[in-house]
Length: 338
Image (cartoon, rainbow, N blue to C red; front, side, top):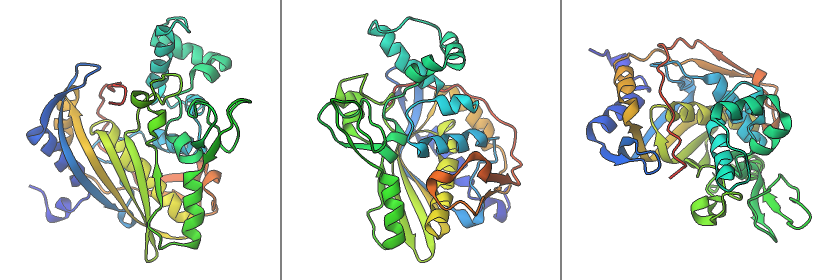
């Protein structure tokens, strides 16, 4: 039986929602893989960041990958090179998916995923070309293509024109929000969106110009109340077992970083879901996880000398007091975003 202190642990928001999905969710089928899943719609969790860093403790979470992925997003890059160089491989399958599209179009030589990754690790030119994911999260956050004389998602680059024939104006949404917050903290329009219809294959009709996956964590809203900065994420589609623990920690860390560079204390991270689901091949793992009792959240220490969002490096973060239960493995379902 849980003690009152245990019942108040914020991680139970995650564990209770997992039970809700498994017990009350509707069965659906992933159209591109045939994998069954259970789903609910419209849920929310809230984490007070003054009470610890919400890195799940009921299974060990790959926090090194979380930090590197967030730094990659913030760089505005669309290529997995930074991740590969830092031995983070959470986006490898998506690069291979885009490569397979090129193979299907007769533009590349077919190879297995293992062959693809071996080539990517050993051949910088190959990685530069085939490590591209299209205009994914970081591009939209920092280099949103606002205007072009030619198809405007294919080669967006931060603040520069993309080739002689396509003059592209890009918008640094996150940079804009940070500078505006410093001057006008009470405004309510600090929304950063990764959902760009012209860069999503279902609407653009072009694999070459589209993101490899339509954004799952779709947009986030920054709010200042008193002396605290809070962030609300809307996630349209959420792989609850594998993806959501990453998403919670990533956006909580982003909240801490934004608070530091704008001069505020961290407030809440609010996680709002559209379709939140558990794949059938993760049910056994999820049942094991919900039996575990959460441990105290760790603390994330950030180098206080960093005052600009682009100046953060991996070495500026130190996780203190993380003592999780053992990891629980599960296969990723590469569904293509819809």
